[in-house]
Image (cartoon, rainbow, N blue to C red; front, side):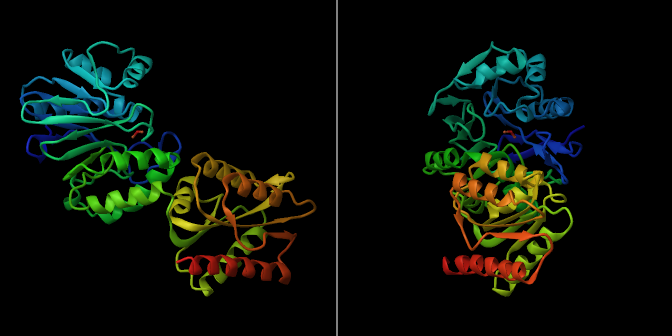
Length: 398
Ligand code: FEO
C-alpha cells in the first residue's frame, strides 16, 4: 500500500505529512503543513530513528512494516521526546514488543512521564557507539536543541546525521524527500520561521551543538521536519550558524499596532523614508493582521527593528506588548531598535518601550517619537528622522 522510500543504501524514509493541523504547538500557523520525519536503518540489526505524531500512527506503522519486509525491529532511537516525534512510541511497543529503546539519561524520565514507559531501555552517554552490523552509530548529546534530552545520532558508515529538530522547517514534503528532488527555495523561509518560533531561544545550545559536530564528515542530514539535506548541506548549516548567533541581514522590520490609524500613518512614513534612504529589505507588520509567527521570523531575519504602539489604558497596545514578550522570551540579541507611538491624553507606551530596550539590551537608534493625537508636520518629520537614523546606522555598519 505504501511505496518503500529508500534514501541511501539501507536507509528508508518512514515519516508522514500533516496537512490537517492548523497550529503547530497550538500556536504557530501551518499554511503549507508539516512533515514528521522518521527513518529506518536496515542492517544486520534494524533501527528506527524517532516516531511521528500520534494522529498518524497507523500510516507510520504500515510504512515501517513495508520497509522491514518481515524483519523485526531491534532498536528505536529516541533523539527527541517532544510529542510530535514521540507520539507513536506506545504503538511501536505494541507492535514490536521486543524493541529496545535507546535514549540518554534524560530521555527515559520523559518516556515514563508522558507514556508510562520505563522498560526495554538502553541508556547511552555522549560519544557512545552502537553497532548495527555494518553500520556504527554514534550518539551526541545536544541538550536544548530543542529540549533537554535532545541528542543526535551519527551513522559513521554512511556519514548521515540524524539531527532531531535541528535544520528542520515547516512545510510538508510534496512528493520528494531529498533536497535534490524538491524546490528547496520554498523551504528556506519556513526554515527561518521554524527556527524563530521553535528553537529561537536556544542560540547558545545550537552553537555548542554545531561546534561539537564540526569535525564530523556529513553527507546527509536527516532532520525531523522538512527535506533531507544532501546537496545543500553547506547552505543549511550556514543558516543555522547565523540564526543561532543572532546575525541578521541589512533590513528593517516595522511592527505596529493602531486603533484609529494614527500610529499606522507613522509606520508608513517611516517605511517610505527608509526606502528613500536606500534600504531595500523592509517588512511592515500590523500586529492585528500579521501572526506573531511571521513577525518573529522577520525579526530573526533583519538587523533593524522599529516598533510603534498607541498608548492603551496607560500602557502598550496589548498585541504589541505580546510581541515584546515573545521577543524577550527568545532573548534575541544584537538588534538596532527604534520606537514610536501616539496617545490622546497620557503617554504610557514610550516608557514601556524604553524599559524593554534596557532589558533586551538593544541599541536604541534615533529619537523616540511621541505623537499626540493626529499626525502633524512635526511628527511626520520626526518619523523621517527616525528612519534616516536607522538607515544610516545600517548602511554605515556594513
Ligand atoms: Fe519537532 Fe521539538 O519537536
